[in-house]
Length: 298
Image 1 (cartoon, rainbow, N blue to C red):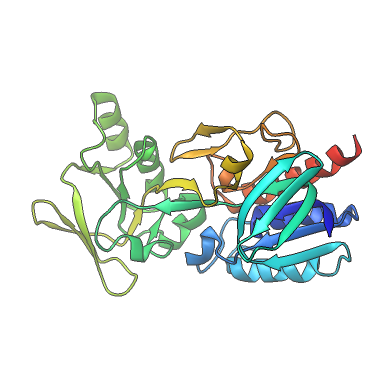
Image 2 (cartoon, rainbow, N blue to C red; image 1 turned 180 degrees about the vertical axis):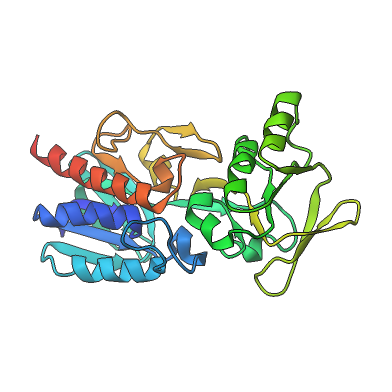
């Protein structure tokens, strides 16, 4: 069967795009592998009306609601390849099945690479986090560390005292000049220049970190920004332009409704933004769905 739109990725961005197109009564296909970036998080926070609800539960309800629309099909699986041009796209599944569409929406997300520090990766999404607005409230008044590994690390360190006593671990990557030192001191941020070499604690909780000089510093939460890369090669296969973000490359969007540089291809969510947040992803998905729909008309 040929669809008006195939949406690749079934998390906040993809499902939001699908809802707009379903309500426009367009035949669409949503393809999802069931491996969202947020699978490590027990709850979604800061998302209006869904605060504290598990991301998986939100997506189950979204699937239930979308399934009520007769023009929506779903396929569980991974897309191996995408090709074609406007009005004549094809996506090939890993099992060899091929689906055709006039438009594509790429909501494929990104993959995270954390600093290579023992004890860090296994606590990702629980006591090691990236977004103060998403997770800061849950670790309020605890001892918080900011692990420098990106250009905005000092900015994050200046923010986090609103949630708890903060130590900025520069990891030898950030130069603290007089101006930055004054700003950090003004916010009550402690600065530690000796690198963290291990994260310590029971299970997925953090009790302390070990430093390169063998000191142990008490800590209960760590904020850091992982390096990110597109979780799927589809945008590159289709020839979409990319640009560099704070943590890695993302799909470059043309002005208006989440359009990529390739006519007929739209993109939304973390793969198409330097800012990663469920609310922003859902809003971008809405715009991508509307953009794809209107392009079919106009």
